[in-house]
Image (cartoon, rainbow, N blue to C red):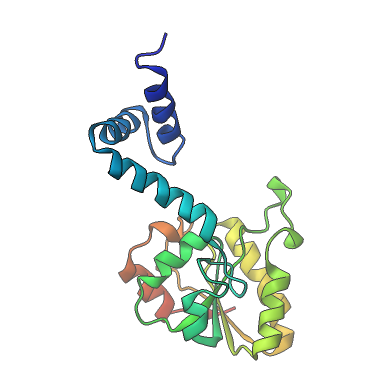
Length: 197
């Protein structure tokens, strides 16, 4: 038998489905919604629906955007591309205020254990951007783990014949960690000390 009425239990379960949210936190979130006025709950629900209706992928880089081309791609140097695994990695990289290039989201890495090969991530799209825009440098900012390294090396081998400089973030980011959790000072140093691969 459930501790709470069915609508409360259902709300708690939705909150528990969020990453990093345990049972107690989910209960606190549910009771916050219940204890606040109806307008706040409706605005929260509208914000969720609006994000699902309006946010899509930027046709250039793959970042989340409410416009066809994201603000970063509209305003920044498209001759310098920083390649990341997921859109959330862009948020981390943007903490480094000195980077003025654009991004390219792969949506994963080459990972034979998960049956993910080069055709399962956005490598073809990266090559098309490099050819179309006359890109001078591609910075590989995949996570410093086995899959991230293998993906970076694979892409570097494809780009070298095109005369594009390919660099890798310096190892200020420890091996096996995720870029998402790196602080801005570490990322800035890694970006400054990137090395050609």
